[in-house]
Length: 140
Image (tube, rainbow, N blue to C red; front, side, top):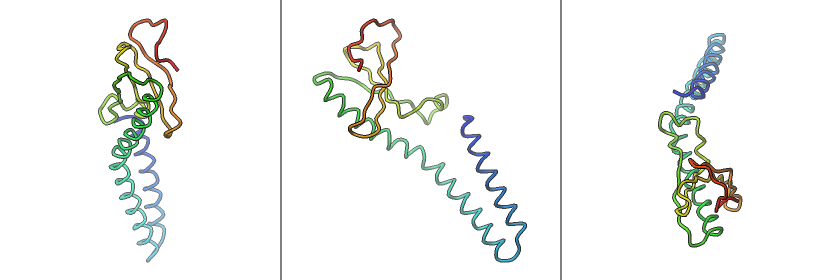
């Protein structure tokens, strides 16, 4: 479990504990209302925690589409492949899944990192190479 997940769980646990402590102070129907609120909070966090990876996958697909359009305009006739951080696997929690790696077939040893906000706003954030490169063909 990644430290961010632990922090999230601690925050949710703290909020839930405060809600439950408030419910024990109150009497009658207010106690039931506050306990219902605590259950609603717990269920909504569970749904959020379950849905979040699928939401990230949908956002990545949209961003890859935006990058695809951008690359087809910038480099017509070239081919490339994408490197996407496997955000659901252990060991990749610290990698930002929204930075999409692009490896061009003409430069197989260089991975360019792209970030897309929307269809017209695609920027190259940097590049990585296992070899020393002096001039890059696709640097923007």
